[in-house]
Amino acid sequence: MEAEQRPASIGSLFVHALPQSHLKYLCYTRPGPEKFNLCVTNGMDVWSTGFSPQKLEEHKSTHGVKTCEEYNSRARDAFEKSAVSLTVLDNIAILKLNQDDQGLTFDLYKLSISEAKAEIRSVMFHLVDQVHHLEDQIKASEESNIFKLDKTMQRTQRMFLAEYDSRRKANGPESSPVSKKRLAGESLINPGSKRTKAPTGVSFEDNILDDSDE
Image 1: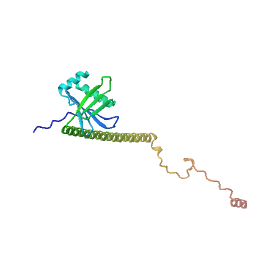
Image 2: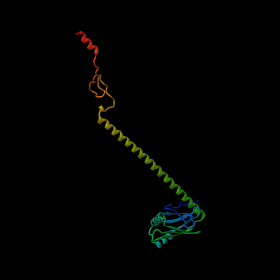
Image 3: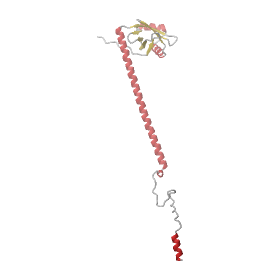
Image 4: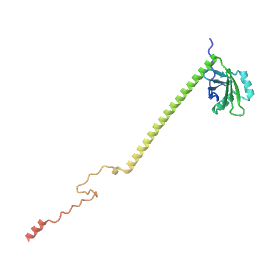
């Protein structure tokens, strides 16, 4: 039993809605070094250029395309600019890339049911891989931001402690808020000077005793 042939990798993707019916189609490329194909699907049916090497060379010659990479880059640019027009006629779909004066036109043919199933399965797993990749990127970015914030907070704390220590050393031990012990008789208002005793007034008893002695 032959192994199932693995389809080419998926390149650019674009969701196109038909203006009249608003039906949505997923347009995507299958690029390669020496091959190129365009596909369109509505989730049930698939249309593909299905280029053989000979048909691809004929299309390149008709549209003045030199390499398969040029196909892929022009399709990517058209997808990004939404410069795409699509016409679906049951068994055939016509896709035009209108991003410049040298627009490209592709005829896409409807795949068989088995081919369509394999193609849709491939697209589904590709999209799941892309979602997982984006989730990993978001998680890595969040972890990086948390690490940077933690480093910034640590650096700020070190700067604050260094500034506080520098000011404390500059002021010296005498700036300590601990009060010195007050000596007996020392003035509370003017520390270092003796407190003046309040006057006691005139003692009349002493004066009477002095007069009687005379």
